[in-house]
Length: 198
Image 1 (cartoon, rainbow, N blue to C red):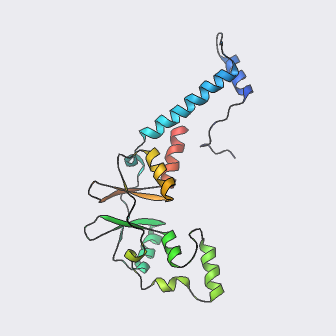
Image 2: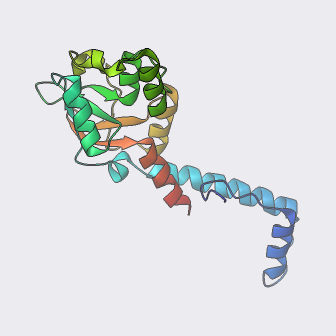
Image 3: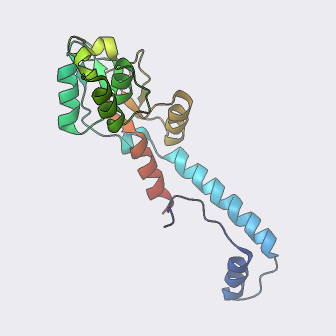
C-alpha cells in the first residue's frame, strides 16, 4: 500500500505519456521536463510548509497537569483523556514543564522505547510492580524542564525542526506570557502535511 505522503516518483514512461497527451508541440526532453517538475514540486512543498502555522493545527483546549499533582492522579488524568503527554502548569497557570510516557518509563528504570509488554514482562520477572515506587512522587519530580514551547505563529516547518532537533513528540503552544493555548503533536503535524500535499 502506498503512503500518500511519499514524494511522487515519475518514470520516463510517465513523462512521455504526459507529453504525448498534451495538445500541440512540446519542445523539451523528458529529462528536462522531469527536472522542472521535481524542482516545482519541491518548491511547492516548501511554500506549503512555510504557510501553515501552529494555530491552524493545534489541539485546544490543551489538557494540562498541575506540578503539584501526584503521579497516580497524573497517570489517571492522562489515561482518561487518551493522551500520552501533557504540559505542566505552575500556580500562576504558566507552562513549567512537560510530562510524557517517556518520563514515566525513565522513572521506572526502563528504556524510553519500552512498550506496555516490556512493563508487564519486567513486573512479572521481578514479581513486583514497577509503578508502585511512583505512588509517593509528584509531577514536578518527573516532568521534563525547562519546557520546550512555541507560539501560535510558528510555522509547521519550524515545528518539524524542533521535533527533530529535540527528539520530542509534542510541543505546547503558548501566549507570550507562557500560558498554554494548545498543543501540537507529531501526529498533528504529519496529518496536516499529508492533507496539504494530497
